[in-house]
Image (cartoon, rainbow, N blue to C red):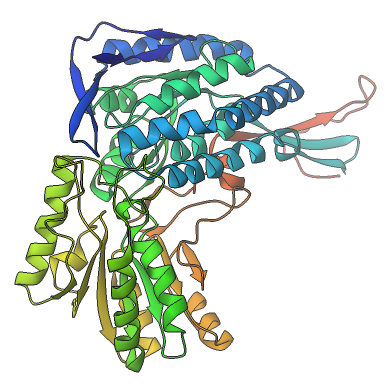
Length: 497
């Protein structure tokens, strides 16, 4: 059985820890590899390599950094199929979805290729007599990313291209559930000409995470995952003096007023709820049906849910694959059970789904629950599975109030042909990312990704302009160049003259 290693200082490394964890094929339910679980000493080795590399990488010209990023971008494009196949084999998502993930990550690399323009400073001439002021931004040092299983390529690529382009060195701790993508990415960086130690990978679990959070030589931590862990990451890393951006969970609502077209809406609701088996932080998990739109939309989306082709991610005929682990499968099925017990009506039931040829796979079929209320567990908890909860309200104002009463504030959407209603909604909801007739409003790389409330701990979103700001700090320089003896010193506080 293959062993998935760390990557430190430009090469695959076993490290000192003897702990291992299984890596499964979610479609077959069988273990296909084992992954190393780093000790604190292993993390220290990666940080030491990154610290040494920072000394020269931080002084590397913007032109050279940009050229390496361009090379990495080309290599990623050439190897996208191989990377997508790795993702599918360990995560379970269908190949087309895995390729889409790679493409969205590549867009961040393309954004970071413009780093010379993104790091341009400011200059003010003659702010006082013979005095000029200018500012620029410098890298922080060694920074780390702790990333989730649901996007093993895209989410890390929301972080490290910007961090590295800004002159930092990077330590990635990917999910131990689907770790292989990180090693292929590391190899592509090396082939692109990135100096050894600038990009490192430590596989692992909580022991590796805590070592990253406590390391005095790591300046900043980026995280994407559940809200309880995001809060833990933020508190522990902040306590050790680090910058932190910790993106947490979500409960994304799609509001459907009575003017919406049921066929259009149901197509997009089904794709947003069941794509990637619902294992997306931007998945629509609650459809808020307004007034007399409810029954028509419910009928249409239920029909679309029954038509979803569930199968192995490697099968090009599949629309949706399995969930990532047996534990995830059992947790999702348990939430559906509790929803039914608490009074929801199971309109489309994905429990007990079997797929020919894959009797041990981690299958959960598309599921639609009607009559869900805000008190039910299936509404309050982040399901992270292919389950769409239907909530009924009587007005758009009631829908906005419902969205705002939820503790999460990651993404939301409205389906409408009424511009006034759309504007009222987008200005009224307390959510970081909003779609108007767009169910999964993930912004382009030149904007920043992030939510509000319990969906974000820290004050900076990921990638885009806020990513550049997060991975750098400002210097302001005030200069005077004139003949010796002409400048008048003063014991008074300096003022402009």
